[in-house]
Image 1 (tube, rainbow, N blue to C red):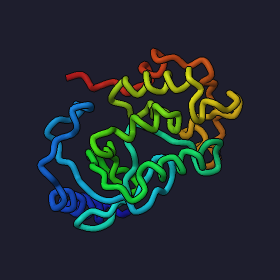
Image 2 (cartoon, rainbow, N blue to C red):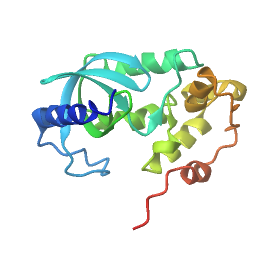
Image 3 (cartoon, helix red, strand yellow):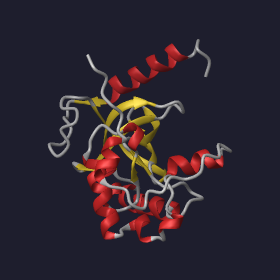
Image 4 (cartoon, helix red, strand yellow):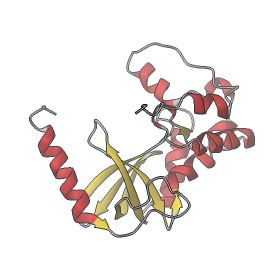
Length: 200
């Protein structure tokens, strides 16, 4: 997208959000942004384990789940993560707590199904990692650790085949940096990898 088109895209995004906003607040189980607008729409397609297409009253949008990263299609557990999310959200009405827009023009959001945080659910069930580079809540590190300990989902596979999706994508794009050994990952290490809030 050209720089000239960026202001128009942001204005269009703002108009879409305002047109579809409800007065609902995020569920009490996730107090990350009380009072933020929540979009309501129907899931028309599950693209992969952390991306869905949602039909709003104002039109269709693509939503990337915030704070988490699911295995890619060609990665071990990628198909299973997609299937699990499809079973849970296919055709369902969801609420979207929008965080931002990414470089692919997808809305990045926390997705709720009848008040339940689906981003958290994916990590708790072992279908996704806590996406360290974008985390704002340490709870995701705890949920990932619990899923690891219980060997749920992707954590049931051999450690040698369990690679972080963000590193898998870099390798696929030819950025050969190798893979980090996360086999002994701890909650403390995960939290330490979170972005630091800027100091005022």
